[in-house]
Image (cartoon, rainbow, N blue to C red; front, top):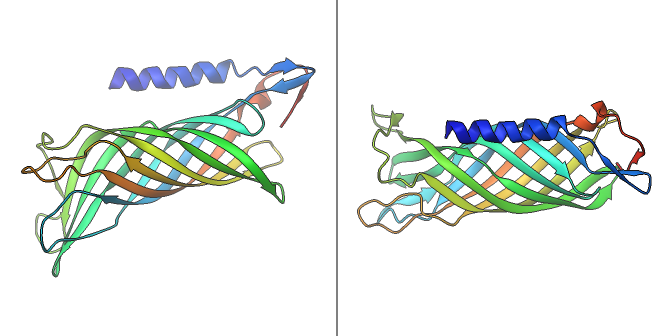
Length: 228
């Protein structure tokens, strides 16, 4: 896992160093941004908890960094490195509990700007994600064991793979940096846990985040005019 993370950061660094735009007909084509991401999510799980259990949304966080690689002015590919907390909450009468799954994830999305309003680009996005489980915490509202960390992760799937889709607004600044306000829905295709032969639960979440994107091409000397 450590080797994979180091390799991913190395690839992003190489792209950053070689952020040279190339020219077609005197115009610079392509661009590259990097920046931090922070947000929150409401997550659910389809696992069957049995009679008397009422599932509710579990609210968590997400933060990390992204790289945005432009193909054209409107189309871009955005890989991310994100830490997140997802899971589900449940009510048994007056008792409440929640299962928090902590993940290190690598979402990859394609983004297409289809409209502009007052200089703000409106885009749609879609792609996939791969989340690697780093820990599970169970929180009880009426128990001294609240906040208990699960030490045996064998009943949990270590990898959660799924799809994501959504959209958002891209706000450009005069210095060519950008602010992205992103709304995304994720749908898991693999099971997250398997207890006592229960149904195979899959994760779903609604995420909202803000990303500040630094335009690396500002520090690259190239001939021609950027289409941005």
